Length: 391
Image 1: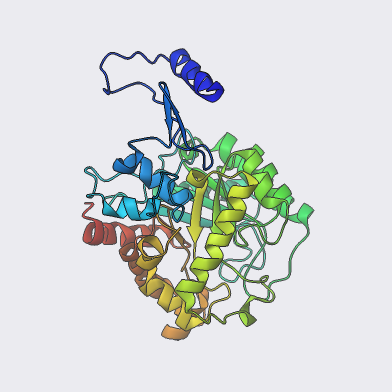
Image 2: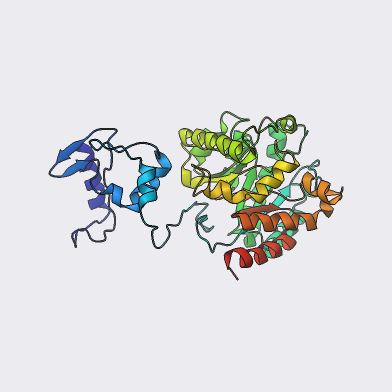
């Protein structure tokens, strides 16, 4: 009852006025459950009497506790079963992943959403495809590159200061910071065209992530989903920023030997991503701040990469616990594209990459991470028209 009093005081302070019984309200706070307790009072019934009839109540409960059984007397049916027994809601609820005040939220359940283009900006001398092209000390060239990305259709720019290609050697934390922080500050303070562009920091180090966010980054893109730095997930939670949780095993130097998926790559990657989601939630990261990435080329062989591209939709709709998240795909210039086409030079793999971007859109990707921004924007734009009816 003390909790109920507190909730009702919040409703009153935020302007709730009961004009119509059971009618629309500016805010409505209810107590659905209180552990396993059953409670009845003239002001309150727990569990809530009508919650099993309401899609908007059962949908979040089925994300949080899908297999638990409501504590009604002699009740044996789970929340998820109740949700599936209801008729489909109309309109379909829109899942929302918030990015920043100046960037539109992602709506991964919208069938008519556009695919976002994430432009890769490697500030490294040794990246597999464009190492040495960009440096944080050449600000005029950096400005030109960012303006070109934006004019070509990029809505997110992913900035990295350390290569994570297979077999790469880590750089020190200070070196990574020296590469990425000046670039992020420059973009945020000196390139007006980038005001509505989201900046993603591609790092697995917590300190780099935190300083990048302080400099103006909106998203933390961690290829290890928090496994390589024990401070990463708590740091993400503290910043309040969104995070990309990518599936990888081991480290860049060991991942090529960790490609055994006994239950199939879709099933086992799903299981391991669910574990990272749970770890992120435990650390305090909100579910509506998470973006998932199956990790093409990271602890995957060619057959597994192709399976992921072919069956991406299974992650989104067929794997329990992974529904409602936005998905990022990073197929650009990958090694398997070179093997399939015989193109050894990574920067010449644009045609093969175009096929993978089309497959990513067809499978439901919300973001594609690419090097060739102008060309892949065109590919995604046409694929959006074909598969999502967005012209």
